[in-house]
Length: 176
Image (tube, rainbow, N blue to C red):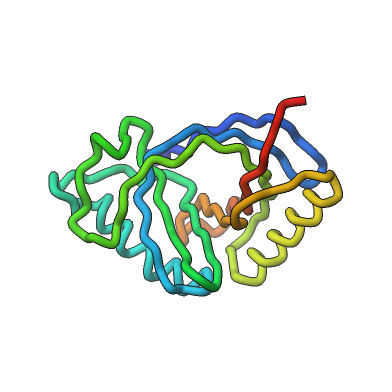
């Protein structure tokens, strides 16, 4: 049986440290929902259904759009968000309009981020632990960040082994 390759959001590795790396992410189109969810589990189940509906044809053209990775999640106490990266051929101007008003299409900004990876199944506890790990590594290297720490999930919930998860945060970066 043939396996389908999932398109992964492109980035360029700018710098590697022992505990983290610095990446540059160019602008991409994203489909996003916002939520009052305050946990990974709560945001994941609610947000995924709405975004999956959009890419599975709940849009003005009834177009099925390929799933990509990673899924971006921004979880906090005020307002959380989940985003699907759209395939590279799309931008906010040429992608069909979602039928669900909660799904918003936008183009992300170019950004430099610090990243820490971890395996296994993500949980709120693992996300918090790895967020603290990245924060400590940035402090130890005198690097400042802005905005909130975000979770990136790369795998289907049905993939049991070789899972890839990341915590990222925006930084001001000038190449050395």
